[in-house]
Amino acid sequence: MTFTLAMTACNGTAKEQAHSAAPKTPPAGSPAGTDSFYKQRLSWSDCGGGFQCAKANVPIDYTKPGSGQMRVSLIRLPAENKSRRIGSLFTNPGGPGASGVDFIRQAGRSFGKDLRERFDIIGFDPRGVGSSDPVRCVDGRRLDQYFSTDSSPDDQSELDTLVAQSKGFAAGCKDKSAARLPYVGTLNAARDMDVLRAAVGDEKLTYYGASYGTYLGAFYAEQFPKKVRALTLDGAVDPKESSTQTLVEQAKGFETALRAFAADCAKRPDCPLGKSEDAVIDRISTFLEQVDKTPLGNSRDSRKVTESWATMGLATALYLKEYWTVLRQAFSQALNQKDGTLFITLADQMVERKSDGSYSNQSEANMAVNCVDKANPTDVTAYGKAVDQARKSAPRFGAFVVWGGLPCVYWPVQSKQQPKRIAAKGAAPILVIGTIRDPATPYKWAKSLASQLDSGVLLSLDGDGHTAYLQGNACITRATDSYLVTTKPPKDGTVCR
Image (cartoon, rainbow, N blue to C red; front, side, top):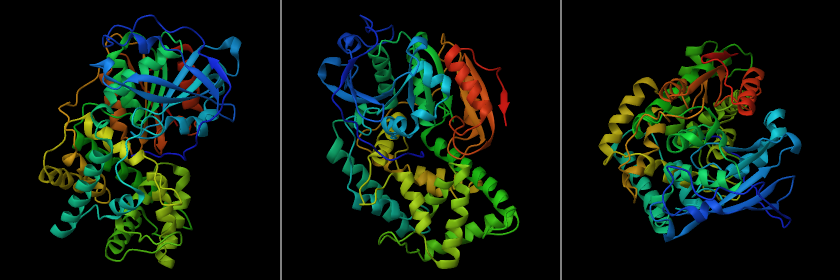
Protein backbone atom coordinates (compact mmCIF):
# COMPACT_ATOMS: atom_id res chain seq x y z
CA MET A 1 0.00 0.00 0.00
CA THR A 2 1.03 3.55 -0.46
CA PHE A 3 -0.31 7.05 -0.16
CA THR A 4 -0.56 8.32 -3.73
CA LEU A 5 -1.45 11.50 -5.56
CA ALA A 6 -3.75 12.59 -8.37
CA MET A 7 -2.67 11.93 -11.95
CA THR A 8 -1.64 14.71 -14.30
CA ALA A 9 -0.78 14.39 -18.00
CA CYS A 10 2.40 15.62 -19.66
CA ASN A 11 2.12 17.47 -22.95
CA GLY A 12 4.21 19.95 -24.86
CA THR A 13 6.37 20.54 -27.89
CA ALA A 14 9.55 22.44 -27.03
CA LYS A 15 12.54 20.06 -27.23
CA GLU A 16 15.95 19.86 -25.64
CA GLN A 17 18.60 17.17 -25.48
CA ALA A 18 20.04 15.38 -22.46
CA HIS A 19 22.93 17.17 -20.79
CA SER A 20 25.66 14.79 -21.87
CA ALA A 21 26.23 11.75 -23.99
CA ALA A 22 25.31 8.34 -22.65
CA PRO A 23 28.00 5.68 -22.17
CA LYS A 24 28.96 3.76 -25.29
CA THR A 25 28.49 0.42 -23.57
CA PRO A 26 26.37 -0.72 -20.62
CA PRO A 27 28.11 -1.24 -17.26
CA ALA A 28 29.23 -4.57 -15.90
CA GLY A 29 26.23 -6.54 -14.75
CA SER A 30 24.00 -5.38 -17.59
CA PRO A 31 22.66 -8.04 -19.94
CA ALA A 32 24.38 -8.37 -23.30
CA GLY A 33 22.65 -6.80 -26.26
CA THR A 34 21.41 -3.70 -24.43
CA ASP A 35 23.90 -1.28 -26.03
CA SER A 36 21.30 0.50 -28.16
CA PHE A 37 19.18 1.23 -25.10
CA TYR A 38 22.14 2.66 -23.19
CA LYS A 39 23.13 4.84 -26.13
CA GLN A 40 19.74 6.53 -26.55
CA ARG A 41 19.41 10.24 -25.90
CA LEU A 42 16.21 11.63 -24.45
CA SER A 43 14.24 14.37 -26.14
CA TRP A 44 12.68 16.50 -23.42
CA SER A 45 9.45 18.44 -24.04
CA ASP A 46 7.99 21.34 -22.11
CA CYS A 47 4.95 19.87 -20.36
CA GLY A 48 3.81 22.87 -18.35
CA GLY A 49 4.49 24.31 -14.92
CA GLY A 50 8.23 24.45 -15.47
CA PHE A 51 8.44 20.68 -16.00
CA GLN A 52 9.84 18.76 -18.95
CA CYS A 53 8.75 15.30 -20.06
CA ALA A 54 10.29 12.54 -22.15
CA LYS A 55 9.95 8.88 -23.12
CA ALA A 56 12.70 6.25 -22.96
CA ASN A 57 12.87 2.83 -24.57
CA VAL A 58 13.73 -0.24 -22.48
CA PRO A 59 13.75 -3.95 -23.39
CA ILE A 60 10.63 -5.88 -22.52
CA ASP A 61 12.83 -8.87 -21.66
CA TYR A 62 16.43 -8.20 -20.63
CA THR A 63 17.36 -11.80 -21.36
CA LYS A 64 16.25 -11.22 -24.96
CA PRO A 65 16.78 -7.50 -25.57
CA GLY A 66 15.90 -7.77 -29.26
CA SER A 67 12.48 -9.30 -28.63
CA GLY A 68 10.65 -6.00 -28.15
CA GLN A 69 10.60 -2.82 -26.09
CA MET A 70 8.50 -0.83 -23.66
CA ARG A 71 8.20 2.92 -23.24
CA VAL A 72 8.95 4.54 -19.89
CA SER A 73 7.58 8.01 -19.15
CA LEU A 74 9.77 10.55 -17.33
CA ILE A 75 9.37 14.05 -15.95
CA ARG A 76 12.00 16.43 -14.63
CA LEU A 77 12.18 19.69 -12.74
CA PRO A 78 15.41 21.24 -14.07
CA ALA A 79 18.09 22.35 -11.65
CA GLU A 80 17.59 25.97 -10.61
CA ASN A 81 21.31 26.81 -10.61
CA LYS A 82 22.91 25.48 -13.80
CA SER A 83 26.41 26.57 -12.80
CA ARG A 84 26.27 24.43 -9.64
CA ARG A 85 24.41 21.51 -11.15
CA ILE A 86 25.66 18.07 -10.04
CA GLY A 87 23.42 15.85 -12.15
CA SER A 88 20.03 14.17 -11.85
CA LEU A 89 18.18 13.02 -8.74
CA PHE A 90 15.96 10.08 -9.65
CA THR A 91 12.96 9.41 -7.41
CA ASN A 92 10.29 6.81 -6.75
CA PRO A 93 7.30 7.49 -4.43
CA GLY A 94 6.42 3.89 -3.62
CA GLY A 95 3.55 1.53 -4.21
CA PRO A 96 4.47 -0.45 -6.12
CA GLY A 97 2.21 1.21 -8.63
CA ALA A 98 2.45 4.88 -7.69
CA SER A 99 3.17 7.25 -10.56
CA GLY A 100 6.57 8.86 -10.28
CA VAL A 101 5.54 11.41 -12.89
CA ASP A 102 2.60 12.56 -10.76
CA PHE A 103 4.77 12.55 -7.66
CA ILE A 104 7.24 15.05 -9.09
CA ARG A 105 4.47 17.25 -10.50
CA GLN A 106 2.97 17.50 -7.04
CA ALA A 107 6.00 17.26 -4.75
CA GLY A 108 9.06 18.18 -6.83
CA ARG A 109 9.27 21.68 -5.38
CA SER A 110 8.99 20.29 -1.84
CA PHE A 111 12.48 18.84 -2.02
CA GLY A 112 15.16 20.77 -0.14
CA LYS A 113 16.51 24.02 -1.60
CA ASP A 114 20.00 22.58 -2.13
CA LEU A 115 18.58 19.65 -4.08
CA ARG A 116 16.38 21.84 -6.26
CA GLU A 117 19.33 24.07 -7.06
CA ARG A 118 21.85 21.36 -7.84
CA PHE A 119 19.88 18.49 -9.38
CA ASP A 120 17.40 17.92 -12.12
CA ILE A 121 14.73 16.19 -10.02
CA ILE A 122 13.38 13.30 -12.07
CA GLY A 123 10.35 11.10 -11.66
CA PHE A 124 9.38 8.19 -13.86
CA ASP A 125 6.54 5.71 -14.12
CA PRO A 126 8.08 2.24 -13.77
CA ARG A 127 7.11 -0.30 -16.41
CA GLY A 128 3.45 -1.26 -16.07
CA VAL A 129 2.61 1.90 -14.10
CA GLY A 130 0.79 5.09 -15.06
CA SER A 131 1.78 6.09 -18.58
CA SER A 132 4.51 3.43 -19.01
CA ASP A 133 2.62 0.65 -20.81
CA PRO A 134 0.26 0.28 -17.83
CA VAL A 135 -1.11 -3.02 -16.58
CA ARG A 136 -4.89 -3.13 -16.74
CA CYS A 137 -7.16 -5.78 -15.25
CA VAL A 138 -10.76 -4.76 -14.50
CA ASP A 139 -12.97 -1.71 -14.87
CA GLY A 140 -14.05 0.69 -12.13
CA ARG A 141 -17.28 -1.17 -11.39
CA ARG A 142 -15.38 -4.41 -10.79
CA LEU A 143 -12.80 -2.66 -8.64
CA ASP A 144 -15.64 -1.19 -6.55
CA GLN A 145 -16.90 -4.72 -5.98
CA TYR A 146 -13.43 -6.01 -5.17
CA PHE A 147 -12.69 -3.31 -2.59
CA SER A 148 -16.19 -3.60 -1.07
CA THR A 149 -15.76 -7.32 -0.45
CA ASP A 150 -15.33 -8.34 3.17
CA SER A 151 -11.57 -8.72 3.66
CA SER A 152 -11.92 -10.17 7.14
CA PRO A 153 -14.33 -13.04 6.39
CA ASP A 154 -16.14 -14.51 9.39
CA ASP A 155 -17.50 -17.66 7.75
CA GLN A 156 -17.03 -19.93 4.74
CA SER A 157 -19.55 -18.03 2.63
CA GLU A 158 -17.69 -14.74 3.09
CA LEU A 159 -14.38 -16.48 2.38
CA ASP A 160 -15.81 -18.00 -0.80
CA THR A 161 -16.86 -14.53 -1.95
CA LEU A 162 -13.39 -13.15 -1.24
CA VAL A 163 -11.78 -16.02 -3.16
CA ALA A 164 -14.11 -15.45 -6.11
CA GLN A 165 -13.27 -11.74 -6.21
CA SER A 166 -9.54 -12.50 -5.98
CA LYS A 167 -9.78 -15.03 -8.80
CA GLY A 168 -11.72 -12.51 -10.88
CA PHE A 169 -9.06 -9.84 -10.36
CA ALA A 170 -6.30 -12.24 -11.45
CA ALA A 171 -8.30 -13.47 -14.43
CA GLY A 172 -8.92 -9.90 -15.56
CA CYS A 173 -5.19 -9.20 -15.51
CA LYS A 174 -4.58 -12.30 -17.61
CA ASP A 175 -7.23 -11.24 -20.12
CA LYS A 176 -6.03 -7.66 -20.50
CA SER A 177 -2.31 -7.68 -19.69
CA ALA A 178 -0.96 -11.21 -20.08
CA ALA A 179 1.97 -10.14 -22.29
CA ARG A 180 3.23 -7.61 -19.71
CA LEU A 181 2.79 -9.58 -16.50
CA PRO A 182 6.03 -11.64 -16.57
CA TYR A 183 8.16 -8.51 -16.99
CA VAL A 184 6.81 -5.86 -14.60
CA GLY A 185 8.74 -6.87 -11.49
CA THR A 186 11.31 -4.90 -9.52
CA LEU A 187 14.29 -6.73 -11.01
CA ASN A 188 13.49 -5.33 -14.45
CA ALA A 189 12.45 -1.92 -13.12
CA ALA A 190 15.87 -1.58 -11.49
CA ARG A 191 17.54 -2.46 -14.79
CA ASP A 192 15.37 0.18 -16.46
CA MET A 193 16.60 2.72 -13.94
CA ASP A 194 20.18 2.09 -15.00
CA VAL A 195 19.22 2.65 -18.63
CA LEU A 196 17.52 5.91 -17.60
CA ARG A 197 20.61 6.95 -15.65
CA ALA A 198 22.70 6.51 -18.78
CA ALA A 199 20.11 8.23 -20.97
CA VAL A 200 20.36 11.47 -18.94
CA GLY A 201 24.15 11.32 -19.08
CA ASP A 202 24.92 10.57 -15.42
CA GLU A 203 27.93 8.35 -14.75
CA LYS A 204 26.46 7.20 -11.41
CA LEU A 205 22.98 7.16 -9.87
CA THR A 206 21.70 9.64 -7.30
CA TYR A 207 18.33 8.49 -5.99
CA TYR A 208 15.58 9.08 -3.45
CA GLY A 209 13.13 6.21 -2.99
CA ALA A 210 10.21 6.11 -0.55
CA SER A 211 8.45 2.98 0.73
CA TYR A 212 8.50 0.44 -2.13
CA GLY A 213 10.99 2.82 -3.75
CA THR A 214 13.50 1.57 -1.16
CA TYR A 215 13.03 -1.96 -2.45
CA LEU A 216 13.63 -0.73 -5.99
CA GLY A 217 16.71 1.18 -4.87
CA ALA A 218 18.11 -1.83 -3.02
CA PHE A 219 17.63 -4.01 -6.10
CA TYR A 220 19.47 -1.38 -8.15
CA ALA A 221 22.38 -1.31 -5.71
CA GLU A 222 22.60 -5.11 -5.72
CA GLN A 223 22.82 -5.25 -9.53
CA PHE A 224 24.90 -2.12 -10.11
CA PRO A 225 26.89 -1.43 -6.92
CA LYS A 226 29.66 0.45 -8.73
CA LYS A 227 27.08 2.79 -10.29
CA VAL A 228 25.80 4.03 -6.91
CA ARG A 229 26.66 7.65 -6.18
CA ALA A 230 24.15 8.28 -3.36
CA LEU A 231 20.93 6.43 -2.57
CA THR A 232 18.41 7.53 0.06
CA LEU A 233 15.97 4.75 0.99
CA ASP A 234 13.17 6.27 3.10
CA GLY A 235 10.61 4.04 4.82
CA ALA A 236 12.48 0.84 4.04
CA VAL A 237 11.05 -2.48 2.89
CA ASP A 238 12.91 -5.59 4.09
CA PRO A 239 13.88 -7.71 1.05
CA LYS A 240 14.48 -10.85 3.10
CA GLU A 241 10.86 -11.14 4.26
CA SER A 242 8.59 -13.63 2.44
CA SER A 243 5.53 -12.33 0.61
CA THR A 244 3.12 -13.26 3.40
CA GLN A 245 5.45 -12.29 6.24
CA THR A 246 5.78 -8.85 4.64
CA LEU A 247 2.00 -8.49 4.90
CA VAL A 248 1.95 -9.73 8.51
CA GLU A 249 4.61 -7.23 9.54
CA GLN A 250 2.86 -4.42 7.69
CA ALA A 251 -0.35 -5.19 9.57
CA LYS A 252 1.61 -4.88 12.83
CA GLY A 253 2.89 -1.51 11.64
CA PHE A 254 -0.63 -0.21 11.12
CA GLU A 255 -1.58 -1.46 14.57
CA THR A 256 1.36 0.43 16.10
CA ALA A 257 0.33 3.60 14.27
CA LEU A 258 -3.29 3.14 15.38
CA ARG A 259 -2.15 2.97 18.99
CA ALA A 260 -0.28 6.25 18.51
CA PHE A 261 -3.42 7.85 17.07
CA ALA A 262 -5.51 6.50 19.94
CA ALA A 263 -3.15 7.89 22.58
CA ASP A 264 -3.22 11.29 20.88
CA CYS A 265 -6.99 11.27 20.40
CA ALA A 266 -7.66 10.43 24.05
CA LYS A 267 -5.93 13.66 25.11
CA ARG A 268 -8.08 15.88 22.89
CA PRO A 269 -11.44 17.42 23.82
CA ASP A 270 -12.88 16.65 20.38
CA CYS A 271 -12.03 12.95 20.48
CA PRO A 272 -15.30 11.05 19.85
CA LEU A 273 -13.86 7.68 20.86
CA GLY A 274 -12.88 7.78 24.53
CA LYS A 275 -10.66 9.27 27.22
CA SER A 276 -7.91 6.67 27.29
CA GLU A 277 -5.84 4.86 24.68
CA ASP A 278 -7.46 1.50 25.44
CA ALA A 279 -10.95 3.01 25.39
CA VAL A 280 -10.30 4.52 21.96
CA ILE A 281 -8.99 1.22 20.60
CA ASP A 282 -12.00 -0.68 22.00
CA ARG A 283 -14.41 1.82 20.43
CA ILE A 284 -12.70 1.53 17.05
CA SER A 285 -12.97 -2.27 17.24
CA THR A 286 -16.67 -2.02 18.08
CA PHE A 287 -17.21 0.43 15.25
CA LEU A 288 -15.62 -1.92 12.69
CA GLU A 289 -17.74 -4.81 13.97
CA GLN A 290 -20.87 -2.68 13.60
CA VAL A 291 -19.99 -1.57 10.08
CA ASP A 292 -19.36 -5.22 9.19
CA LYS A 293 -22.95 -5.99 10.13
CA THR A 294 -24.56 -2.75 8.94
CA PRO A 295 -22.60 -0.77 6.32
CA LEU A 296 -22.92 3.01 6.30
CA GLY A 297 -24.13 5.23 3.47
CA ASN A 298 -22.18 8.14 2.05
CA SER A 299 -23.19 11.41 0.41
CA ARG A 300 -20.87 11.08 -2.61
CA ASP A 301 -22.31 8.04 -4.42
CA SER A 302 -24.33 4.86 -3.97
CA ARG A 303 -21.55 2.71 -2.49
CA LYS A 304 -22.08 1.22 0.93
CA VAL A 305 -19.24 1.89 3.35
CA THR A 306 -18.46 -1.68 4.31
CA GLU A 307 -15.94 -2.78 6.92
CA SER A 308 -13.32 -3.05 4.17
CA TRP A 309 -13.87 0.52 2.94
CA ALA A 310 -13.88 1.81 6.53
CA THR A 311 -10.65 -0.04 7.39
CA MET A 312 -9.03 1.28 4.24
CA GLY A 313 -10.05 4.82 5.15
CA LEU A 314 -8.69 4.30 8.66
CA ALA A 315 -5.38 3.02 7.26
CA THR A 316 -5.10 5.94 4.84
CA ALA A 317 -5.41 8.48 7.66
CA LEU A 318 -2.49 6.84 9.49
CA TYR A 319 -0.08 7.61 6.65
CA LEU A 320 0.16 11.26 7.67
CA LYS A 321 -0.17 12.61 11.21
CA GLU A 322 -1.81 15.70 9.72
CA TYR A 323 -4.72 13.44 8.74
CA TRP A 324 -5.48 12.51 12.34
CA THR A 325 -7.75 15.54 12.58
CA VAL A 326 -9.71 14.26 9.57
CA LEU A 327 -9.87 10.81 11.13
CA ARG A 328 -11.41 12.18 14.32
CA GLN A 329 -13.97 13.97 12.15
CA ALA A 330 -14.63 10.76 10.21
CA PHE A 331 -15.38 8.87 13.41
CA SER A 332 -17.59 11.66 14.71
CA GLN A 333 -19.53 11.74 11.43
CA ALA A 334 -19.88 7.95 11.35
CA LEU A 335 -20.84 7.49 15.00
CA ASN A 336 -23.15 10.50 15.40
CA GLN A 337 -24.68 10.72 11.93
CA LYS A 338 -24.29 7.17 10.62
CA ASP A 339 -22.50 8.72 7.66
CA GLY A 340 -19.39 7.11 6.15
CA THR A 341 -18.54 9.86 3.66
CA LEU A 342 -15.21 10.85 5.16
CA PHE A 343 -14.11 7.24 5.52
CA ILE A 344 -14.78 6.43 1.88
CA THR A 345 -13.20 9.73 0.80
CA LEU A 346 -10.01 8.72 2.58
CA ALA A 347 -10.18 5.21 1.11
CA ASP A 348 -10.58 6.60 -2.41
CA GLN A 349 -7.30 8.45 -1.96
CA MET A 350 -5.57 5.19 -1.08
CA VAL A 351 -6.73 3.40 -4.24
CA GLU A 352 -6.81 6.47 -6.51
CA ARG A 353 -10.52 6.23 -7.32
CA LYS A 354 -11.76 9.24 -9.24
CA SER A 355 -15.06 11.02 -8.83
CA ASP A 356 -16.41 9.48 -12.05
CA GLY A 357 -15.90 5.98 -10.68
CA SER A 358 -12.78 5.19 -12.68
CA TYR A 359 -9.42 4.34 -11.15
CA SER A 360 -5.80 4.95 -12.00
CA ASN A 361 -3.94 1.70 -12.60
CA GLN A 362 -2.15 1.95 -9.25
CA SER A 363 -3.99 -0.98 -7.63
CA GLU A 364 -3.57 -3.21 -10.67
CA ALA A 365 0.13 -2.39 -11.01
CA ASN A 366 0.60 -2.88 -7.28
CA MET A 367 -0.74 -6.42 -7.48
CA ALA A 368 1.12 -7.19 -10.71
CA VAL A 369 4.50 -6.22 -9.26
CA ASN A 370 3.97 -7.80 -5.85
CA CYS A 371 2.81 -11.10 -7.33
CA VAL A 372 5.90 -11.55 -9.53
CA ASP A 373 8.49 -10.15 -7.11
CA LYS A 374 8.41 -13.11 -4.72
CA ALA A 375 7.12 -16.66 -4.63
CA ASN A 376 3.61 -16.88 -3.20
CA PRO A 377 1.63 -19.55 -1.35
CA THR A 378 -0.15 -21.93 -3.67
CA ASP A 379 -3.51 -22.13 -1.91
CA VAL A 380 -5.92 -20.23 0.26
CA THR A 381 -5.13 -22.37 3.32
CA ALA A 382 -1.59 -21.00 3.49
CA TYR A 383 -2.96 -17.47 3.38
CA GLY A 384 -5.39 -18.36 6.13
CA LYS A 385 -2.50 -19.39 8.38
CA ALA A 386 -0.78 -16.05 7.76
CA VAL A 387 -4.04 -14.26 8.58
CA ASP A 388 -4.32 -16.15 11.87
CA GLN A 389 -0.76 -15.10 12.72
CA ALA A 390 -1.49 -11.47 11.86
CA ARG A 391 -4.75 -11.30 13.83
CA LYS A 392 -2.94 -12.09 17.07
CA SER A 393 -0.72 -9.00 16.98
CA ALA A 394 -2.83 -6.80 14.69
CA PRO A 395 -6.52 -7.43 15.47
CA ARG A 396 -7.80 -4.44 13.51
CA PHE A 397 -5.58 -4.78 10.42
CA GLY A 398 -4.29 -8.36 10.26
CA ALA A 399 -7.00 -9.88 8.09
CA PHE A 400 -7.48 -6.74 6.00
CA VAL A 401 -3.80 -6.49 5.03
CA VAL A 402 -2.94 -10.16 4.59
CA TRP A 403 -6.04 -11.22 2.66
CA GLY A 404 -5.27 -8.30 0.35
CA GLY A 405 -2.53 -10.41 -1.24
CA LEU A 406 -4.83 -13.34 -2.06
CA PRO A 407 -5.02 -12.66 -5.85
CA CYS A 408 -1.35 -13.71 -6.03
CA VAL A 409 -2.41 -17.32 -5.34
CA TYR A 410 -4.32 -17.26 -8.63
CA TRP A 411 -1.92 -15.03 -10.58
CA PRO A 412 -1.28 -16.00 -14.22
CA VAL A 413 2.49 -15.73 -13.71
CA GLN A 414 3.89 -17.56 -10.70
CA SER A 415 7.28 -16.37 -9.49
CA LYS A 416 10.08 -18.62 -8.26
CA GLN A 417 12.05 -15.65 -6.94
CA GLN A 418 12.80 -16.14 -3.27
CA PRO A 419 13.32 -13.35 -0.72
CA LYS A 420 16.96 -12.66 -0.01
CA ARG A 421 19.25 -10.41 1.94
CA ILE A 422 20.71 -7.58 -0.13
CA ALA A 423 24.28 -6.54 0.62
CA ALA A 424 25.19 -4.50 -2.49
CA LYS A 425 28.87 -5.22 -1.93
CA GLY A 426 31.11 -2.49 -3.28
CA ALA A 427 28.46 0.25 -3.26
CA ALA A 428 29.15 3.73 -1.90
CA PRO A 429 27.42 4.60 1.42
CA ILE A 430 23.64 4.15 1.24
CA LEU A 431 21.36 6.12 3.58
CA VAL A 432 18.40 4.20 5.03
CA ILE A 433 15.72 6.22 6.85
CA GLY A 434 13.15 4.76 9.21
CA THR A 435 10.25 6.38 11.07
CA ILE A 436 9.71 4.72 14.44
CA ARG A 437 5.90 4.57 14.24
CA ASP A 438 5.58 4.17 10.48
CA PRO A 439 2.33 2.33 9.66
CA ALA A 440 3.15 0.88 6.23
CA THR A 441 6.86 0.12 6.50
CA PRO A 442 7.60 -0.86 10.10
CA TYR A 443 10.72 0.64 11.66
CA LYS A 444 12.27 -2.81 12.11
CA TRP A 445 12.53 -3.04 8.31
CA ALA A 446 14.72 0.06 8.14
CA LYS A 447 17.00 -1.35 10.80
CA SER A 448 17.15 -4.67 8.97
CA LEU A 449 17.91 -3.19 5.54
CA ALA A 450 20.59 -0.88 6.93
CA SER A 451 22.28 -3.87 8.57
CA GLN A 452 22.04 -6.01 5.41
CA LEU A 453 23.67 -3.43 3.15
CA ASP A 454 27.46 -3.53 3.40
CA SER A 455 27.51 0.28 3.25
CA GLY A 456 24.17 0.95 4.94
CA VAL A 457 23.78 3.92 7.30
CA LEU A 458 20.65 4.23 9.45
CA LEU A 459 18.94 7.59 10.07
CA SER A 460 15.81 7.49 12.24
CA LEU A 461 12.87 9.80 12.88
CA ASP A 462 11.20 9.47 16.26
CA GLY A 463 7.82 10.33 14.82
CA ASP A 464 4.58 9.21 13.20
CA GLY A 465 3.41 8.71 9.64
CA HIS A 466 4.77 6.97 6.57
CA THR A 467 8.35 7.89 5.56
CA ALA A 468 10.30 10.85 6.92
CA TYR A 469 11.66 13.11 4.17
CA LEU A 470 9.13 15.67 2.84
CA GLN A 471 7.35 15.58 6.23
CA GLY A 472 8.96 18.84 7.29
CA ASN A 473 11.39 17.66 9.96
CA ALA A 474 14.39 19.99 9.69
CA CYS A 475 16.87 17.45 11.04
CA ILE A 476 15.86 14.83 8.44
CA THR A 477 15.90 17.41 5.64
CA ARG A 478 19.38 18.69 6.50
CA ALA A 479 20.89 15.22 6.85
CA THR A 480 19.31 13.91 3.65
CA ASP A 481 20.09 16.93 1.51
CA SER A 482 23.68 17.09 2.72
CA TYR A 483 24.20 13.41 1.92
CA LEU A 484 22.69 13.62 -1.57
CA VAL A 485 24.81 16.69 -2.40
CA THR A 486 28.13 15.62 -0.83
CA THR A 487 27.71 11.78 -0.69
CA LYS A 488 28.73 11.95 2.99
CA PRO A 489 26.05 10.37 5.18
CA PRO A 490 25.22 11.33 8.77
CA LYS A 491 26.63 9.24 11.61
CA ASP A 492 25.13 5.76 11.61
CA GLY A 493 22.35 5.56 14.21
CA THR A 494 21.49 9.28 14.19
CA VAL A 495 17.97 9.92 15.53
CA CYS A 496 15.95 13.03 14.61
CA ARG A 497 13.05 14.24 16.74
